Image (cartoon, rainbow, N blue to C red):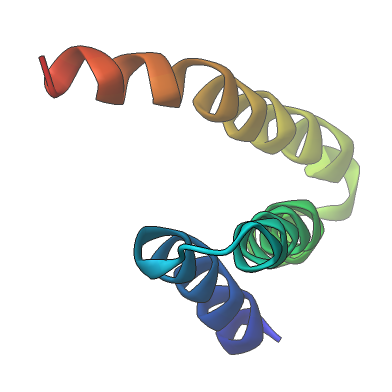
Length: 83
């Protein structure tokens, strides 16, 4: 499952770079969105699989916090790095 998500995450931006038609850009956005939305759940399961049962809710909360903070500030940080 993780391999499929990685392939979708790579195909989305790669097809957007080389696309000239609007339908291809729409498909690229769809691929990237599916990879991001599915990736959070799959990665949360992998990240918390070795945590003790009584600590799992806190671990999932911390994982989601880290994932969403990265999604919120990641683009801003990358844009600052490219200036």
